Image (tube, rainbow, N blue to C red; front, top):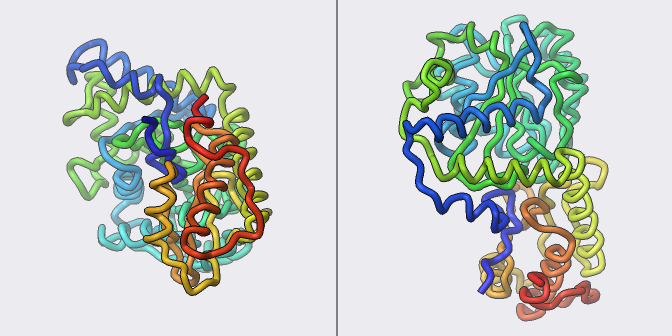
Amino acid sequence: MRDPILLTPGPLTTSLATKTAMLHDWGSWDSSFNALTAKVRQRLVAIIAGDNAGDSAYTCVPLQGSGTFAVEAAIGTLLPPDGKLLCLVNGAYGKRIAQMTAMMKRQVTSIDFGESAPVDPAQVAAALASDPLITHVAIVYCETSTGILNPLADIADVVAAAGKKLIIDAMSAFGALPLFAREMQFDAVIASANKCLEGVPGLGFVVVKTAALEQAQGYAHSLSLDLYQQWRYMEQTGQWRYTPPTHVVAALDAALDQYEAEGGQAARLARYSANCACLIAGLKRLGLESFLPEDIQAPIIVTVKAPAHPNWDFKVFYELTKARGVVLYPGKLTTAETFRVGCIGAISQPEMQLALDVICGALGEMGIPCLSTAATFTNVEEVSQ
């Protein structure tokens, strides 16, 4: 039996090689595991071409836990106690950054662009000009609650021109969408193992300017989420401060081997883009509509408008698709009834075709007609061959 295909924004479907990497047990203080941690850190910095010298040098600080742990660590460590964060919001994850910053008792202000529009750099520039107390800006590159793609390069230019510091939540972008230190200015980028790098959950990381970390000693609001102390301890000892997710680190190292063998960022983006195009075209054939226009749709996850039919019930739909071997995500919008289909993971167009077939079959069983069948594959066994 094959595991269900996870068409979600993470955790996601992983390769056999990635799973196999977790069969070995590691000592958390063992020299071989320390070397593995160091190698993974270097590889993650290299993905954004951040391995330069001087003030432009970056380092990677991994943390136990989900991506949100890493986001909180980055905000809590890099934002000074007397600093002020401008949070750019167009979905649930931007709102979460604002919420956690307020809970830290740090100054925060937000611009909310709604759930269907990208961040407007002109409004960001105006906000920075009107409030000199703002020291840092936080942006979600790909807002996973909808799949919306924000114009990161333009925002980075605006923030740099204002002399402020940029923190990027690239949770659903790192490794797939373009993000290079040589092309834009930012202090930190945050991601996790179980997204576009196709590792497993349990490890978040921050790729951050070394100079910014050096200035952040004593800023953190938390013992375990102190990014500076985690970095200093790793630099001095090669070890994690607290029990590391050993198997997750090993899986990420194996996933990075596959990432490089595939061709890195450009190849990963091409595969995800093909998945997304296949999905959107198939949804149209089924009579379903994606929530976002294609020009702001990131090839990561697609939010789909629920059928306008009295029989629609997401919980029933979810169970029917899961029984057919495909796991989808519920919608995360406040303004519309939707569900979400991920395009990332160790999958390609055959799995997307299977998902379309499964969606149509589930809707049919619910008494909701599709305009046409869109499938090429009709069962998981065919996809696995």
